Length: 134
Image 1 (cartoon, rainbow, N blue to C red):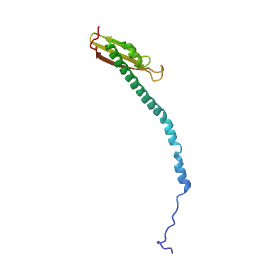
Image 2 (image 1 turned 180 degrees about the vertical axis):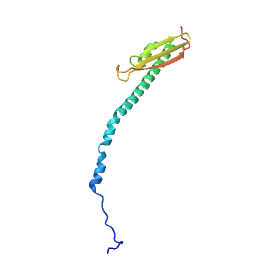
Image 3 (image 1 turned 120 degrees about the horizontal axis):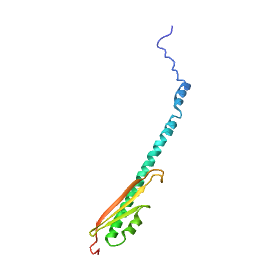
Image 4 (image 1 turned 90 degrees about the vertical axis):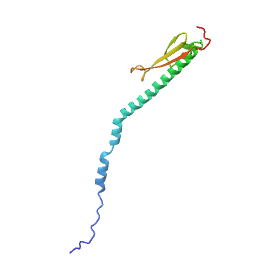
């Protein structure tokens, strides 16, 4: 008769079964990454486009300020705006006896002419310099 106090043998788990369970999901992360990659690329391109729009708008605002100051002193505001404005920008100058208003407009396209662009502008208004002879 055997005693119940004898220790039962410890049975190690079968390595084949463990290996089969662990390798059943092999390649799943790669497949999920491949499925999500277009969304990641689209998000990155959108962020880069937003930075480009902000940069062009800042350049338009700087060009409008420089042109308004130059025009208020009696210099060529259009020449000052063209130096600072982005390529293809439109410069509109409205000069009165007391003030000068300059608006610089540009269109930012994400991929040249493939998609519609985003219109940005910068506008500045300054008083005429004392001593300006209208």
